[in-house]
Image 1: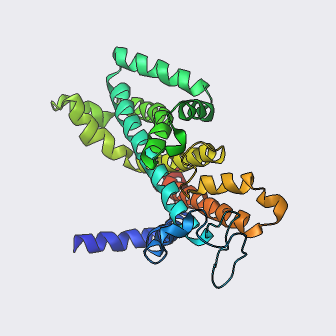
Image 2 (image 1 turned 90 degrees about the vertical axis):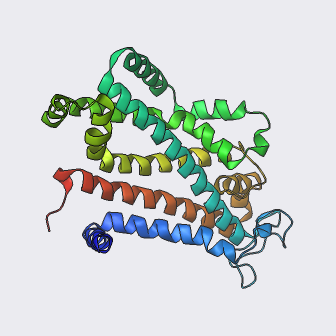
Image 3 (image 1 turned 30 degrees about the horizontal axis):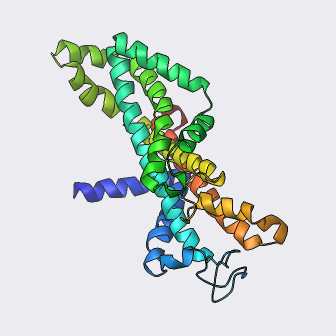
Length: 290
């Protein structure tokens, strides 16, 4: 009964928060497209020489085909699935590491805090994409890079921003009255972090997760568009790489250009709207009164 009331309450809030509702709807449609549709469309069509090349959208090929005989319907289905998977894995790892470091350094301070703060400050001065290109280019056999390898590379820089932001939040909260009362009641530092600080920052962590996944998607697209990654797999970034490689712009293959761009834009819009909606929930100053 409580779960039913909680779900109804969530639906009511989503109706009052169009940004969050719109973002969740777009993300749900993307997930359905990249998972359920894959049950009916074989992946073999997403690889070269699987069908007739250079075909515009038709009844046989609803999304058309590219210059090397990839059917763009399965290419976009499995490419969206791969790109979202990379972003989700990289975002979760980056936010997980950033959360642990942010809470530990922000609450306890000391030498560990000084070291992590120095490392974060140094990494913040280096363009993250340049660092990603350097790291990914030095991996043995980058043309055989798996989804997990790509995500792990992206997570090497994904923890920096969450660590800095969460540390600042924790430092501002650790001197508040409820934390002082917890200390006086005999709670240990880890108990205060888990039971007092973390619940208060859950909405902020949800916003950070949406941003981290979005950043992971953006990083993977940037690397793959440069040709860094598995060239054979039909990710969205590699789709952009191949349409540039074969000059789809000059040859007028409009369907090959528009379709992956629409999918990429939908991903970014979904996470942007979710971030805006969650910010309204987490920040009382922007919360609407109903």
